[in-house]
Each structure stands twice: as structure tokens, then as C-alpha cells.
Length: 111
Length: 111
DNA sequence: TTACATACATCGAAACTCGAGGTATGTAGC
DNA sequence: GCTACATACCTCGAGTTTCGATGTATGTAA
Image (cartoon, rainbow over all chains, first blue to last red; front, side, top):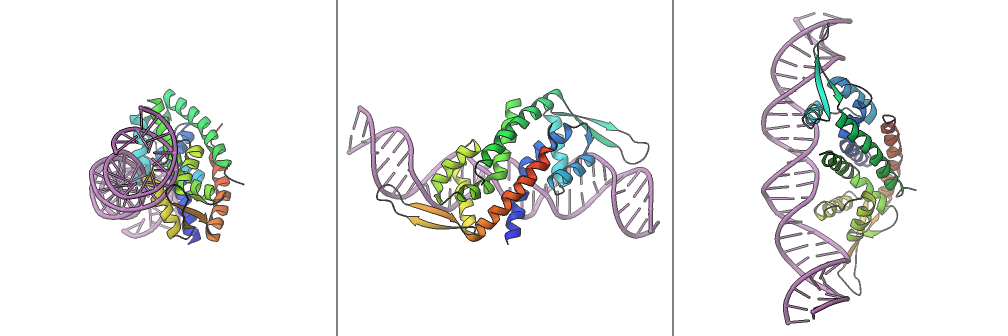
């Protein structure tokens, strides 16, 4: 039960930072959806469901934080590669600063 | 629009850490719901709606992470004061450790 | 030919959120 | 005595969000 509760708490963290984490990964260079999924699993410690990730990416594109481009490979299925726009980079930059403040505030609560 | 997006991002952070933040505040000593609301507003940078907070507190009680006790005051309305149980303290302790790991992982993404 | 990894996308049942509304006490100002 | 506001708790349900299931398609390996 303790594990159950902790699992829920961590799951919430993941959900909470998801769009931020996506921006941060994109901030390291263009990625396609599947690659992003792998990176996020690594960073967040759990897989992000596709039903969550792809709609989110569409949202980033719609809000002009990222642009997508289809990349055809010599081998394997086509990839849709996402890259941050200037706006996306600005938002990421500001979010990173705010994340620092947020973390410090929360940290004050902890011994 | 940039501000809109950032506001959404921060709102998500708040939501994501809410139960954790509540545990952390309770970890500093017993509080009643209203006092908790004030503390959270201070820590999280925005007010947590009562419709969110009170059900959450009931959940903590139901899951035996906290126990509640009614405190009648000489003046003013009665207060329901919450204190962590041993289980609650254990969960908080473990969550704090995991929060550190989580933060570091996420931090690796940031320049 | 079966299974699995890569790769994208949508749908809608189920779960969650929280604004609005309700109850009640006490204080301050008019 | 009336209004407004701060303290203090709680519930309901319309609206939003989530994500498991499902579908499509290519390439590789057993």
C-alpha cells in the first residue's frame, strides 16, 4: 500500500512535468515522436503512453512552440521530426528559470 | 500567448506536486485545512481550490497517511486538524528521496 | 510466418478537476 | 441591525483530461 501510494505520487509528478520535459528534450535538438518517447522514458523513469504523447506533440505544433517535418528514411517507416521554434525556445528558457524557483520553494519544505 | 503557455505549464507543476506538497507541509507539524491552504498558496505560488483540497485531505485520512481531529476554538468555527501517521511519515520520507532523484534526472536536460 | 521493434495516429470510456454553492462563526464598519 | 469580509468546513457535477485499446505500415530476426 505504501508502494501504491508512492507510485501514484510519482505518476503525478510525471504528468505534471510532461509538457516541460518534452520541451526540454526538444531543446537538446530535433527528435521524432518515437525517439522522444524513448528519451522521456529514460528521463521520467516510466513510459509515456502514445495516446498521451502524440496529441501533446500536435498541441505543441498548433501552439507554434515546435514545427514538424516528415523525414523519409531509406529503411523503416517515415518519421515526423519535431524542432523548437524561436517561441518554443523562449518558453523553454523561461520555464527552466521558473522551475528553479519552484524547486527551491518546495525544497524549503524538506528537511 | 507566451504567458498563457507558461501559466499552463506552472499550473501543471502545481497539480503534479500537490499531494506531495501537502504531505511535506504536514511533515512540518499538524495543520488544519484552511491553514494548509494558506501554506500551500505560499509554497506553490497560487491558491489551491477548496474543491481540490478538502477531498484530497479526506483521501489522506482514508489511506491512513494522516489522522484528523476536530479542534473547537473558544472563538471562531471549529477546525479539523490533520497530522501525519507513521505511515504518512514513511511515505513522505521516501517521496523526498525520490523527488531528489527525479529532480536530478530532469535537471540533466537543462543547460 | 510469427514475433517483435520501429513509427504514427485516433477514439471514447473512465477518471479527475475545481468553480459554484452551501453552512456556520466572529469581527468591523456604518 | 445590516453588510461585508475573514475564518473554516464540505459536496456536487459539468467540463476537461487521460490513456488503453486499436489500427496502419515497414523492416528484421528467429
